[in-house]
Image (cartoon, rainbow, N blue to C red; front, side, top):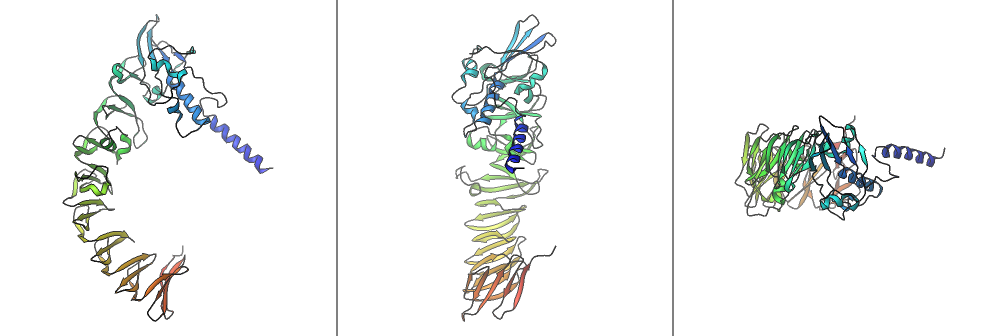
Length: 457
């Protein structure tokens, strides 16, 4: 069978499977005129919904899938319109009426669907379809799905609240916004509320866990609310108030007080709380402006405090790189010294610290033990070999156990076809060969010493 025919058949089957998941046909675009949904009378109250938003959403989704573009169709066709929720008695008299929270977005406007909500009256340009709807149809309304079978509504002055299906107010319209909140376990059983660019949280029953008094770390710096979901640290939230940043639980319990400039995760469920140099701009590089750090353990007890330095940088598991008057050192997370603050440069390489001081270089272990003394003019780690220069001469150490391979005695080193060639003053050569399965040093007399060899499985 022709392989191209097989490919076409498989593509058609996959396309049918994917497109069958869409709530409309890609061949026939969804209608632009919203339905008016009439639900059964429940204990004397009937819910009637002019379903504008979900009609608009289907049109946006249709364009996104049939005409993808860089600028989202929600911006081109926006702003998103609001639904109208009408509650009437058995005699047909309207007793309550609400608008849903108007969606966000700006653009050219989708006049056929949203002119009515933008103008404030409820007369559509086209006559809507009137649908006798069952409870199942409620799931086509996005707010019903997102708010645990409740509806979001917009009260006076644009504030937002929550109503049930009888029109009773569950959450009063006192917030600028309400949206579902997704935790680290991907549960949507809580809700974020925002007011005056601050956020709070409600539980699954819309009870207040904490009032909207916090901003996110990004919101504190850039004057927008941001997303608390982005500020998770080990199931807690990094939050900020006017006096600083701290850590709270999702119930609003303060775990780390609000007296720091930044809070982040450390190793092994520790928490790092930083203070910045106020003389530096907030948009400067983070590590340049961090001058002190308090380390909290998983129970929020203080393990150690690193302070009194010009710069403090988290430098891996249980250690910090610190500087004072242009000299560098390393402290552990208790604030105890690993490397004294006396080096001109410190780098992490080969599972150790490569340090330099007064023009000389050496290697010190992560625990502070000297592996190579501070006596080389240059030091280059390449694979299983360490090439050092002392008194202008090149020597070699093993990068595995830091043992001496050959004393510094060569005039120069150069690369040639998979090996470093070492040449002495008489022109005699030795070399370090790097093969995929092993590397070895060959002396000027032809003696071979294996530096590393791949283990047999």
